[in-house]
Length: 343
Ligand SMILES: NC(=O)c1ccc[n+]([C@@H]2O[C@H](COP(=O)([O-])OP(=O)(O)OC[C@H]3O[C@@H](n4cnc5c(N)ncnc54)[C@H](O)[C@@H]3O)[C@@H](O)[C@H]2O)c1
Image 1 (cartoon, helix red, strand yellow):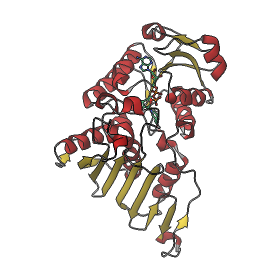
Image 2: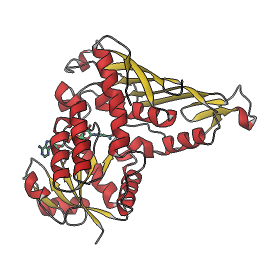
Image 3: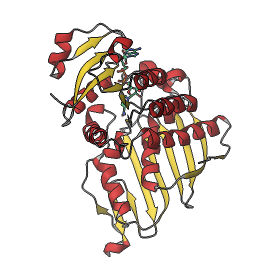
Image 4: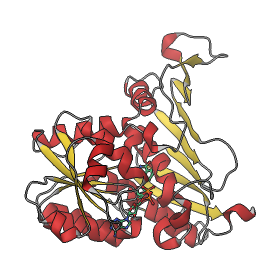
């Protein structure tokens, strides 16, 4: 018997990656799944190991006193209601990105968790990736000096070949290029720059390709940011490209630069005309089975053990990223007006 029983809301692509990752942790195991489709208990349990009870009634699952954590992998437009219901039932929450598609809904989720004393983990799992753990260590060790510019961009063509396309094209669930996927790059940029965002300005457009016609919103956006410490940054969110998945990182500081898996640091007296190479696993696919959920969920359960918020992706930390994203989308809706964030 493990310490934390987890009930999953939604049984799609993300859910199956989450179940394996949760079951691989020291303290967590998936014991229930709520899906709108009828599921067979034996088949689901055999598919993932352990004993999993399927529910078709969410209230019944949330009323199960043996569950400690609810993991929300439903459509984005349902995240607010599912998260508030889970908090009201006293369950800790794992919440897929986007937290929700409006600032009001995000505020309601955070308020419900605070009011009911439950803790949250938002699936900004890129923060736990080898690529960004190493990148952050290079920055924290001072090898790049003081960062004055950073760009982290998300290029992932989400077309009919991709499962999410069937709901992602609608404004209600997809939201924007940033909300649906580019949020990972914006979140990584905020993590490495390590300073509050003072202002943002964003513009957006969409591809003329027929492939992406079903999208109800602009599927390419670029946001420029000014940080409180004077640094500047840029994040592009491109979900209508026809190319391999690419998570682009370029950081520039007073002692050197980092470009994806390459860097130069004056502090090492290396040859500035050539990059030095970092050995790390790159984020190079949108396939969730490649994502570092296991490390993230392990960190969440460890934090629950210690009765504290998890580092890096708590509700409080992740909602700061969504504040920036909502400000960027508001700027794009106004043709690129500069929006100042209040802290
Ligand atoms: N962090 C990441 O990198 C990442 C990757 C993929 C998906 N996601 C996120 O995960 C979530 C789900 O995406 P997905 O790709 O798994 O989509 P999906 O379409 O494969 O799965 C969504 C699931 O939710 C179920 N569902 C929807 N409404 C429900 C309801 N009312 N009750 C019960 N089940 C319901 C659907 O039947 C489906 O099984 C989205 O928020 C998406 O943005 C995140």
